[in-house]
Structures are given as structure tokens and as C-alpha cells.
Amino acid sequence: MKLNILIVEDHELTRFGLKTTFEGVDYVNTIFEAESAEKALEIFDSNQIDVIIMDLGLPGMNGIEATQKIRSRKKDVKVIMLTSHNDEKEVISSLKAGANAYCSKEINPQRLISVVQSVADGAAWFDPSIAHIVLKASCQAQVQEDNSAENAKKYDLTARESQILKLMTEGYSNMEIAQILVISINTTKAHVANILQKLEVDDRLQAALKALKNKIV
Ligand code: CA
Image (cartoon, rainbow, N blue to C red):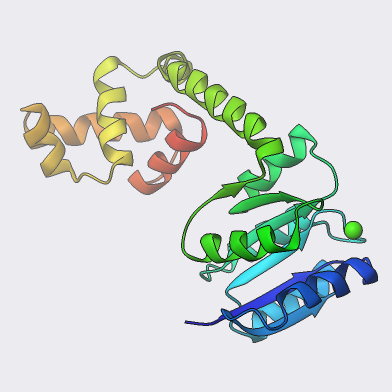
């Protein structure tokens, strides 16, 4: 399948260089161009786009905000963030916003052509110069995970409730949770009601989302 690529870059010469890079590449169908995030969203909303090459520093809405907006559209698209500097915060923010890859503008064109293809195939790709930042961030995420017991305490959850909340985030029903923990369905329901109350949410979906967001489980 051939790819429709959207290049988002305000710097005209860079945009031209990117477009030229992808012209004639065998996996490319159509190349779209936008000089701003706002324009990119318009193009994205009215066309089938497979891969977006997104400049981070744009006038108006920046590449990170644009990526968040694109992710909120719930369409299947890969976003490759392109930037001239490797600021740790920007790398992490880009990934959190939902970028699939992060490239330095110093990347050579042939390399970028292969990065676009592998990202389109579902791979994540990080410029070697920023790989250490990503690794460090994932180590920090691990530390946060270790803090989950502490976070559970903040909500005054008992060990049993934390256990049930974790199963809820994994999508198990009350009946399944009862079977897994070998407790009655009524006991399970009572625990779930307590969990909803302690987390101050209305339903199990909200509870699961809150648990994941606040790293309680
Ligand atoms: Ca720029």
C-alpha cells in the first residue's frame, strides 16, 4: 500500500527539501504540505493521511499541540516529530502527545526515507542521539510504577481494593474478578462501590482511567 505523507514545516527551504526527498520514492502516493499546524489539521481532516512529518517549532500552534489534536481525532496516522534540537522535555512531551518517532533535522534524507517506511509499518523510531533520553524516561516510568502502592494509600484504598482496581483497569467484569479472587459476587460489588466512592468517580471506566492516570495501579 502506498502512503500519503503530510509535511508540516514553516521554513520554506526545509519544507522544499523534505518534499524533494520524498518525490519519486516508491512507497509514496501523494505528498501534502502545510506551513502551519492549523493548515495541517485542515488537510488532515479532509484527506486520508498515513504519515505526518511534523516540525516541532511552528508559529502559532506548535508540533506537540498539533500532535495532541491529531491524536484526539482518533484516526490511524503515524507522526514523526522533526526538530533541530534535542531538548529532553520536548522529546518526552512529543512522545506523550503521541508521536511515533522523533528525528533530528540533521538526519540524512535516505535515512529519513527508511524511518518513514518503518514507522508506517508500526515501528517506533528514535534518533540515536535522543535514544538515551527515551531510555531514561522509561526508567522513570518504572520508578513511578513502583510508587503505585504509595499512590493507592493517598486514596485510602485497602490492599484488596487496589488489587480489584487493577483488575478493573484490565477490563475484568465483577463476575470475573469474583472468580479470580475466589470471593462472592456481592463482596466484589461492595468492593467496587467502595473504590468508586474513594476515587470520587461515577463508574468503573472512570475509575480505571483515574487509576491509570494517577498511577494508582
Ligand atoms: Ca520551524
